[in-house]
Length: 69
Image 1 (cartoon, rainbow, N blue to C red):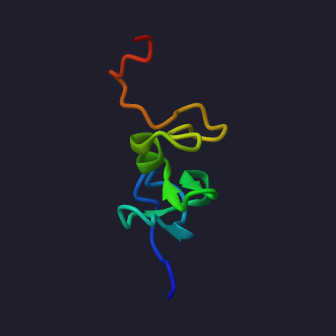
Image 2 (image 1 turned 45 degrees about the vertical axis):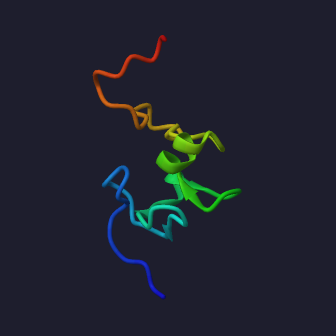
Image 3 (image 1 turned 90 degrees about the vertical axis):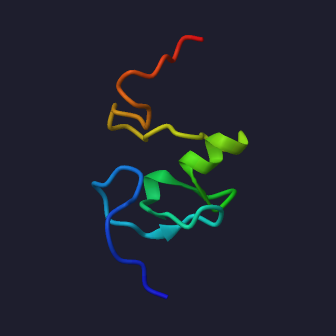
């Protein structure tokens, strides 16, 4: 099966994988190798790096997210 389109997490990079939990099309940055999950699903279940965006400085948190709890 061919995967085509933009990543459904960042909407910037070409999707290369499909999340095994939710089915989102995701780029390699938002794919957790160990689980087969997207970073959003990994964060929900508490595995992997769960939502960090490798190096672009933007992350996956909304602008108004409180990171200091």
